[in-house]
Length: 636
Image 1 (cartoon, rainbow, N blue to C red):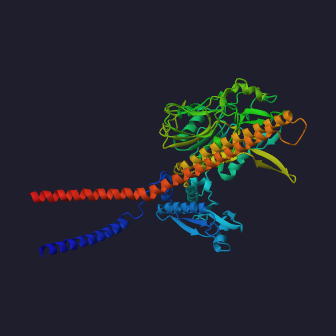
Image 2: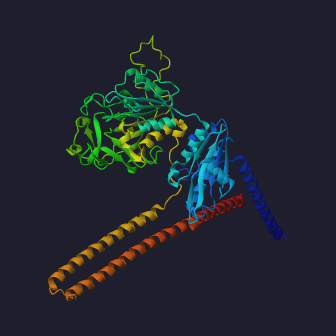
Image 3: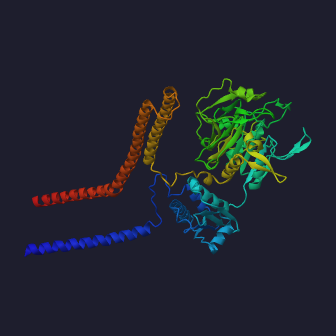
């Protein structure tokens, strides 16, 4: 009776413990839900579900509400699972950003079905509709935003191939809505980039289209090349061909950078558009420009006596009318492989052309972030600038040309804490009459942001525009992205430092790299087999031709025994090679299937098995501790 009562008591105690554990689990879950509301843990490799600190600072600094309208056509996208997956990614990122805005961002998700008010609203915002399927259903996939002053900004269509810059594009839209005033650009140029009077021809000379384009996008103010101070209202300073600047002007530029101003500078070892002192079509004076002590102090090397030549990317040009086209290795057409696909300035560009460009590099002892934006191919080398003074034949540049195998940097982004080029203050100023006493900065106030380009001709019209005539009207057509490059650079620098700090991320769509590697290996084997088959086919046809011409002199259409034997041998060999091709394809499928099986095993069986093993080990360890405890109690 005592034993039975003890057993019942144990069962009751066990059931009660289970109920208590269940209640404790529910209570802890509820407590965690309230205590850690909004908390997130992102375990993805590139933090796909986390926003950067720059974006978080932008949304937390909002002073007035901003409304966001996310448009996505659900029905029209039914046949595109990849697009629907990306749309979910965009929506989740938007919701994450809104969550961090302290209520200043308001998100509305709209499905613009045909003939609906939502579709009319999408069209009113100017979103782009893409036709999908046989029926031509219109698909909207964009974002519109408004602020309290009726300002509007849109992302017309979220392109999946720009997914790495998704966060930047959204943060940029929010920043523009929060700061609707156009950025002020200070333009200081040693070249006639604006419409001006040409004394040599007695006519007005048209300005460069790249600068006219900037005046449409920004508030561009022209600055003299002999200024001694740069107004604090200037957001970005645009320097073009800073040639023979006075120490006072260089000091003004330096202090502009030190106090947090953004700078984009175009320097050049040979500025082809610098016509100062030219006679008979040849420039008689120096055409180089540089920021002299500034670049050196900032940790950037630029040798104005050397020009970049690229044997692989050199364009074919005609120097004079009537001359046959020939490759000019100093007129370089940069392609997508030459551009930094991880930087928003160059990621969407296809081609940029430069002419007698220089080379930039980071000094060995510099404590800066030096990020190349435009680079040459590996088939490049440096050429003395003196060879371009009276160059009439581009082919002569190939004399003695030997590629170094190095990829040279033509344009770069520079970030970091910079030291002033004038640590002792304004050059030539006396302590008692220096107006800048007390305002001089020996180092940058914050992380400086610069973009340096070792070419000025990149901005000129001939390198990216072509004039065409249609119905008597002349208009310019862009054949390269030079104008987009400078506009992107200024748009990027004109934003806040928080916006510039947002970097491109890894794509949300992660390919199976092992599978792709197997496919490439199989393709290589297939191509080798196909080439072998082609070689044997040509060899057999050659032998057949020889047999036909040598052994069948009467012109008969009948095959000789030798020809029949050769033909049979080839047919057998062809069957063998085709069988090997099938085997290669079959082995590829087997490898991929085997890899898929292992992935399923890892995901379905291995992880639960490890958890189960861990639970069993914990249970065994617990039983041993209990057993040891009971043994110790009975001994006592």
